[in-house]
Image (cartoon, rainbow, N blue to C red; front, side):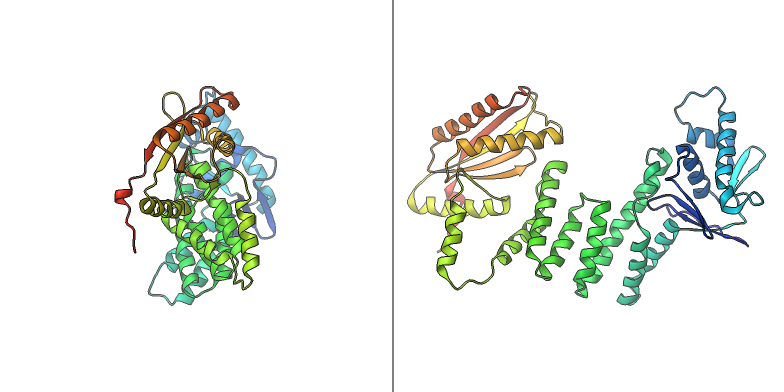
Length: 411
């Protein structure tokens, strides 16, 4: 849904920015949406520019600008708005040339002016760059030019306008798709610094897109920047749990394993390693780990239990409303932190905990019987009830003994 281009024999070129701040340039003169003027003025200008290939009837503008507002005299309100808008545009071209024309009950952007719009140019650049027949270097240059244009989503200050939504969605997903295509080319050519710059810019625009963090972490690992890779993993993991209510994907979990492998450099002094291990086990309470490592601990404990004849219980604790539905994400995040604090005082140092989803913890309880597991979880629930005053939030749980017959043990 690209915005069509209209060029004419123009004495002046109008440069218009719509990706981010709304700006209109003619020569050295500029006005933007930071100036203290009517929100509807910018909505009117945007609508006329987007549909500048045609004349727009008065009724269409009224229904677009005042969709659900009662107005005793909408035609007069539109005329007043047009007058103020034209007056605001005078500094650009002066009174001798009008940017907005009127004719027989309809209005249009001046067709005699050549317009260059960043959104259109972005669309054209990424369309050319998507051509796999072009050399890689040419495609990268086209993508690079496109990224410079995309400062933010389409007309963010007009996001309350219904007609803007489809354009915003179109350009947003076109941008993300272009970032991934450009990133793949950079990754192929090992241009890791450019990837980190690209992803950091994209994350400012779309902070909840897991694939951006995957690409960024790959580049950071390739550069040996392990602390930054771990920091970004923790950031996206928190976003996935807290905002989206999902666990990291398998690809992201695999990257986390790579980070953990690379985090420790080579060490020849065994006493240094032992000191590090002593510090690691000194923390009181249960052992908390990411789900990807919880799976490894689960397998290790299963092997031990199968060889020794021991038993292991698994518990699932779920936070919910009394009817079983989930609370709001913000409340879930806050309350799940309270649940973790309770578990720290109620669980043993040999117990293992992971966050399975935004509102769930999974517990691994070695050497515990079914009765012991139920008693442990009940203790957590009772402690939570005493600490949490929001009585409408409850904890549900299930326990189950690990089925050792289904665990494969390799000799």
